[in-house]
Length: 257
Image 1 (spheres, helix red, strand yellow):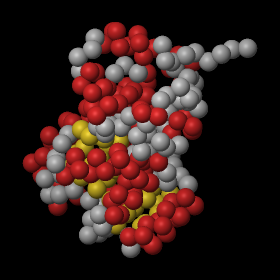
Image 2 (cartoon, helix red, strand yellow):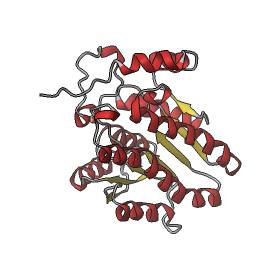
Image 3 (cartoon, one colour):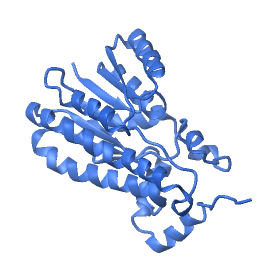
Image 4 (tube, helix red, strand yellow):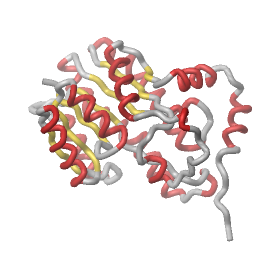
């Protein structure tokens, strides 16, 4: 039986990954700050799929609590075969107008935490010569889109490099690169997305289904929908300076009174 550990599992893509992996017969370790929501999800998955769910509440920006999750990943007696690095958040203001402490916290959660947790799980995966790491990145990382995009670009590049390093051991690594997805992410970040058309939105279940198919096919990157696949293709060819200036128009300084 495969065991998967998912960060940010209480809602959104994390909860969708939990349901998708439970449907495939995986046992789960659910990680997030909200213990009540994790417990409710664990009970739901137990009823629906007979899944064994371990609830592991943790604030990954707390060094000690992140260490607790890393220890669980390194536990040889209770091996974790799949790690889904999903936890993250965004900020409403562009970098020059955002508190540096918030920027540092975001960078830690999007880059430092996946690095630490991945490093913890890899020795066991190498020894068993199987398993997978899925890093939830973003199409924001394909182009110059601010510090959130910069962190996600790091995560995608990290995943693509790690995939080659782990290939001889039978360990798969996938960068999951969704576009705008119907989760709580935008609301929590204070983002105004009212101008976006319905056509740009993805459902979390579609992102997870595509990711699991791409993981089985050993692809390096998973991009959901033809719209975002075309976006990713264009990102490789458009001039970076042109794109950076266009993206800057969507990032507005907060109004002052």
